[in-house]
Length: 553
Image (tube, rainbow, N blue to C red; front, side, top):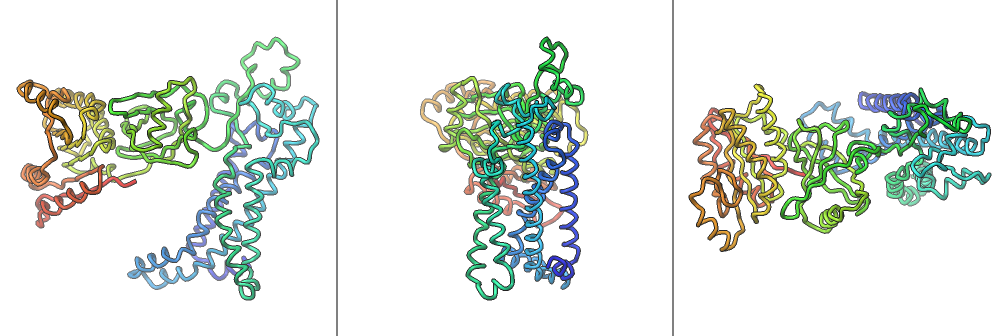
């Protein structure tokens, strides 16, 4: 059947899919077969580790693809977008079910490889746990007796129980693996032509097991039974120098060399934790936690292989609060800094609980998991000669990253900076919200004045909510050199911006420029700014043009 499918649909897309699968399998096979972090894991499992992990990566890739060919709305959309393409290209969409079947056969094959490899792994785990010969696998299997974070072999009992059944039905990976495999077997076997033609209901209902399949796939690796050596442990007790000493420690009671410490291990899935601010669950110095006025929490995490651009955002999860909730937050740090940070305002149950958790000042900080970074429209801000940045409340965060990066560019004398003028507008309901951003604006004011570019940044702060006490205080100190509310040179404006006047002034100041308008704020403000961009853009291509960009998560 696979040969017939291949003959029927062997074209560029098919070859690309096959090439990606071969690349993924080869890359991860070599990675787990040679990476030093899995030296001790390979000492127990041998090459079965690489076979299991490489097939798992390909399984994830093909599981991502399996539903796309049967998404009818997606296919309709693609047909519409391909209406101007060559007929041969559009015809490839007619082979969607063929591709769906091809991916399904690949899933069945990879599942068999993955399952067989793990059966070998379980046998070797069990054999190493039972061993008493003092060999390296035997010693590694007893490390759980030295500490909770030191175990490498998930089988901790010396009793000769039925290991396969025990792991399959008492652990999350084992139980979900059995469920996923059964669901896949039922879906594949009920898809044969005989059953589809004669017992269509059987085919139809068993195919809805894909919901169970994907649910099991999501949580299959959550327990992390297959482990590797942590980065910090790798630096302290490298296996190439220290593996031989593990088997001699019982004989050498007065150990004095650098390899006396036992290796420590962590799960394969990468995460950002409060014991480690970079990727991986390894111990690192604690990150910075800063509380700002107006219940704004700032989290600063170290970069470890984390690359970012201005205006990007990440998804954040706190397992102590919820395992399933992931929330997007814009990065407020600059790419030039050696850490990445986010600012979180109390706005809902999840953020309230997160802020309360960090305010408790417990000895053990909660773990934070990070997914990203992801690109946004704000990345293009330095592609415009003139930029208008509009932030509402906590929506100022992407522009914090931009303005910080701008400060570093001035510090470093960056001559490649294309942007010549930035207008920054910040709308806030209360005075407390201004506090955490004041220092950055003050530093920018000073640096640009020293560089002779005091006119580079024009900012306007709008306070949209106030009481008579604030108004009277401002009126009494109206003639002071700095603003009463913020302490900055520019005065805070009470009320909302008159966007027609603002756009008219920018158009008059830059009559032949392309102006990028960037917003992070509510939809109503977006409509107003988008309307102003259209109204004040000239039809003459040689004159001013406003291009609207909005942050979307």
